[in-house]
Every structure is written in C-alpha cells, then in structure tokens.
Image 1: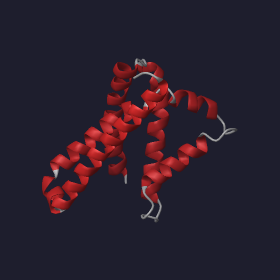
Image 2: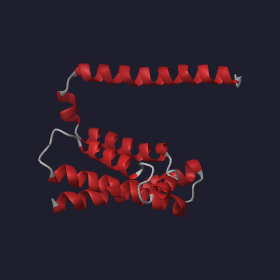
Image 3: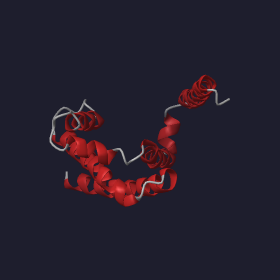
Length: 151
C-alpha cells in the first residue's frame, strides 16, 4: 500500500502544479490564494484513496469515498466548514478537469492495444458522446444567450 500512496502522491503533485498554473492563467487566481483549497482537495483525494484501499468493499469506487468525505467536511456547522468552502472556491473546476482529462487521454494513448480490444463499437459510442456533448452544450448556450439578450 505504501507504493500506491507514493504513486498517488507523485500524481497529485503533478496535477496540483498544473491546476495552479491553469487556475492562475485561465482564471487569474494567484497560486498562493489557491494553494489552501488545493491542499484540501488533494488531502480529500488521498484520504479517499487510502480508505478505498484499506476497506474490503472493492465494489464501491474510491470517488464515492472522496465525495462523501467532501460532503461531510462541508456540512454547515462542521469545524472549519466555512474556511474549507472559502479555500476550495479559489480553485476553478475547469482548472482541475483539464489536467485530469489530459492524463486520461495520455493513459488511453499508452494502451491503444487495450483500447482496440474494446472494439469498433466503443469508438462509435465515444464519437456520439463527444458530438452529443458538443451539440448539447451549444444548444444550451444558444438558448441562455438568447434569453439574456446577448445574441
């Protein structure tokens, strides 16, 4: 388990640096302002992964533990709840999603043989998901912008 924790720590450090840079460039949040929120998010991630690894219930994904922990520490009335919410508000969601999705793309690219084993149907489904997401986002943006009178 120690080796897993070390690998997670390295991955979290790399992603955290990318998140800090993306948050700074894209959303003009200074890295020092985002650092406390990033520490909270990384801590939640590490604790959730450790819980997942330690407990015998392997059918429950680690993201469930992470989400539950995040929910618990932000319940109104919990110690430091207001500070945690204030700190994590400084870290933009898209600044987090970008390096994570890039990592996912790289890991898929490294294992094209495994990806190819999924078959041509997976590629079609993936393309439909991408096109549907793009069109859905464009339609929603169009509707909202028209309601607001921007276009």
